[in-house]
Each structure stands twice: as C-alpha cells, then as structure tokens.
Length: 415
Image (cartoon, helix red, strand yellow):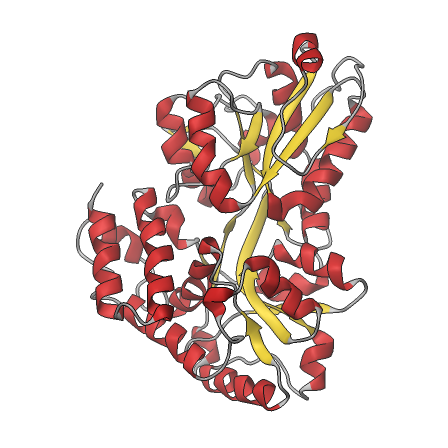
C-alpha cells in the first residue's frame, strides 16, 4: 500500500452529478471520482477507509448509471472536465472501455504501480494497452442468478442445474403467483445479461476459441450458437420465467421485485448482491449458474474482471489520484470493495474468505469453467449497443433472431 498523503481536510460523497466547489478546486486538495451507481456501497466504504489514511484529501464521488456514464465520460475527458479517477470497463466493447479511452490519451500510465505486477496473466489483455497497465482491476465478478433462499425454499426447490429443471421451476413459481426471475429490460444494459449467461454454455462449451475465430473472420454471430442463446432467451419469456412486461420494468424495479418477494431472483452481475442484501437486510442470498442444456457438466458462467478504475491523464491532482488507485489495488482496498460489493477480489488473495453466496462463482472460477464477459472481446462499442437494441426489439416482437444476429454481425464488422 502506498504511503498516506500529507494530512488535508474532509470527505464528501454525493449521489448526484456534482463538481467540486471553486474553493475546493483552488485548494488543489479535491479529488473527484466517478463510479457506476451499482458500485455505490463498496465505493463509499473504500472512500471512507482512504479518508482515514489520508484525512486531508477531500474526495467527491459522483455516481451515474451505466448508460449515463458510458455516454458522457469520453465527452467530459475530451473537454477537460473529466474526474480524476473514474470507472473504466476492462477490454473493449463500450465507449468507456480501456481500448477506446487509452488510444486517445485519456488514461494515465499505471505500469509502475505496485498492483500492476500482481495482475494475473489471463487478465492482462483487458487491463493493458500496448503492454502497459492503464487500469487497476478491483473485483472479479460473474453473471448468474442471484436469488432469495427463502423464496426458493418456499417453492420446495433447489437451484436448477439443467435447462429442463429451469423451465419446470419457472412453472412452479408461476403457480405460486411469482416469477422465477425478475427482468428489467427497460434499462438497456440489463438486456445483455441473460444472453451472456446462456451463450457462455451454448457458444463457448464447444467453441472456446470463438472470440479468436470471430476476430479472424472465421465465425459470425449468425452462424453460431448465439442463435440458440437468443432463442432460449425468448423461450424463457414464453415459458413465464420472467415478470410480466420486462420492457416496462427497470433495473431498480427488478431488484425491488426480488426484495418484495414477487420474484425468486434475477440474472445479474455478482455486484448486485450488495444492493439486494442492503435492501433485504439479513435475508440469505445465493447465486447459481444459468443452465442452457440438459447436461449440467456443460454449464459455464461468464466471469471476468468487473470493477476497474483509471486515472485521468490530465488530472489536476495526480498525486492524490495515484494514491487512491494504489489503495484500490492494495489488499485492504480490494478486500473492502469485494466484501461490500459481494464479489471476489480481482487480485489473488488466498487468505481472504469470500461471501458464501458466491460459492458457485468461486467453484466455477477455480475449476476453469468461466468465460470472459463477451463484450470485453468485441472490437468496438457498437456491437454492445446493437445487442441492447435488438434484445429490446425481440421482446417487442419487432425483429427476428436471424435479423438481430445479422445486425450484430454488421456492427462487429464495422471496425
């Protein structure tokens, strides 16, 4: 862990989009951080701990949802109004991803930071640009079904391990006037999660080199098992696995559906565990891999670096910014973030005990049964945006699976 900065002043954590006051900016002691709203709980705790070690640094945290953050960050950086430290998506795939920001010179070189040498070899491709570390990876997350154990027990059921068991359990939940899974497809970024969870198995179980074949032009979405994943996504809707009107349901409403007992669970990234747990109190939660076939041994989970942060190359307070990312990369910072976020640390820590709710993700990770989040390997952010759009169109009945995949192929090839 880096040495604390010389003592300074107070801590300011705010939920809305704000900026430091003129007095703060003039003092040079203000540190501005922008984070995803889904990471509010762990970031608040990390800032509190950083503040304790660096009492003279005034930290202002801005939280924004995924869509807002991705659409505004690049504009802020290009206009010189960007934060000192900010969420950066590993790899590629959206406007706020490493491989979109680093080539434009927006990210500071973090190659000399202590944490850089601790990044696992398999994660370096999504944390480095031209062989140099440009982000600090903070958590390792997965996509699966986060569920209430009480609700599942109420159905007299166990987590399904096969596709047939999943569909049967959807019917059981409907018989009890519940949905098995809450789905908030009104929120664009949510649309991708079920597809990813299914494609992990349908695509990568038989074709672990699918991303490389896509990049070389030897594979397409349309002529792959992505078709099966999308068809199964729609079948789940037809079988009543989801709440009524997913297109009219937001992410927040989907979480509320689980908290209020109207749904057993929801397909989400592991970091959502912290929000569900915060709102449900002491309720026991779990997570299981979404099956896509009737062979449980074939099931894979999307798993990859989740939360990651970069430093503005034009930061007005580079020393404080580097100290903050050093803290995020320290054993203490990683443990706080992962514990409060309900996920795993990005940097290896054999002594740390993980949240019991993440036992399935831990088993899949250690067993080599995870695949990277799909968009991290896509060549441009248009593919992900197209994916968001076509899923909403599929649920509205305005497009076919064939057309949806063709549009994704067009976006992929438009590099």
